[in-house]
Length: 290
Image 1 (tube, rainbow, N blue to C red):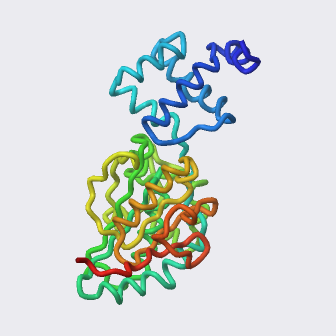
Image 2 (image 1 turned 60 degrees about the horizontal axis):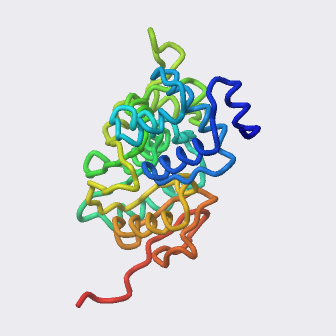
Image 3 (image 1 turned 45 degrees about the horizontal axis):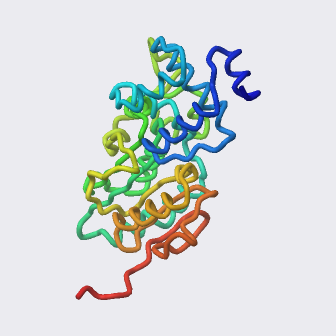
């Protein structure tokens, strides 16, 4: 038994190299995420809770349960292994560009259709799509005369439920300052005392849906804007390439893709051009259909 396995055994369950390898393959199979060697303790910590909840005594038994396709546990498994780090106005320069440049441009380009579509891919507990909704509400003066929608998707059903509820702890809304906080949030009362809830005006712009990026996408688009930030870093390069191509395919001509600062489509696809800090524009097609 390796030193790491021995430590795990003392903590409650034996966790062998074979267990870790088997679980990493299951994570990749069901989510497309490649778990690095240094994620071993994370996998043990999160999934040992599932073993206890199910009354199982080994990771081998848990692997067999997932391999057999047990539906309820498969959802709990994907929820457990995905990481959900987010915040309101995270990477604020993206929202500055959206408000100052992109929304005015979309209002001009889409003035005939009066249709704007955004996709928050990997929306976690909802801070990103609600921030997008604030930007749209604040920068489209007659938004009630526009067909504006935000699709917010995530693999984790638990965080999606929190996102749809729109109720946050006070520490989660610290980046929402001044008048904006007063405008878009209401203090919780009763069982929600000490928390804050987003206004329905924001919630009405957003459709929260469960989606595995590695599977088929039921939506047709096209989208004007896609936010997929700090998601692609969990995938290997071939999977990233596939997703960048798919994003390009569902964006309008010259649509915008916002990604994390550690992510880049360069060397993977020629479909995008960098126009700002981790902001990309879809290239126009330079050919005519036959």
